[in-house]
Image (cartoon, rainbow, N blue to C red; front, side, top):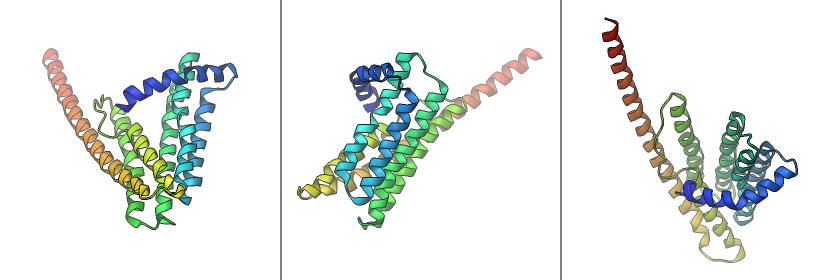
Length: 224
């Protein structure tokens, strides 16, 4: 849902900014790299220190680069396999930094081994969810399922919760509980999404193998 509606809205909003960068000679790859570096800085500098509000502000400023670089490439007519590969690869790096930042906080000053483990699970499951789709498509399957919690949902749920939880340092009582709740939601949702994709790939693979077998039989009958 977020991919379908929010992405379309922000793409329209950011189109003038993308055009401005093009006029200044900035390349889409540069935007991708700067955006990823900004997200990593926000996550790995602020989150391990418990500065969730300011970390979220920094990350939010840079996370929209994921929409800007693609918008620029389309305006320039330069969409390429390399650009898609770079963008997808650095998305995984950025996601790892965000949940790694949470894990570092809970492993250190946050002093909560269970939430540290949940953060690591969110990190790993998010990577595997993306891999299942990429691997399924690589072997020729459509992987026609999105799943309960994709990347957009993971980021929105965790970052919104982190931003509000960070208000605890400004004197807002009890609000810091939002981040643990969000991490559990993301963890469970990612697990459900992983199961959905694995089941879908299994079904599609069985259908493709059965169709290939029928085709072999037809060809054998034609040859005889």
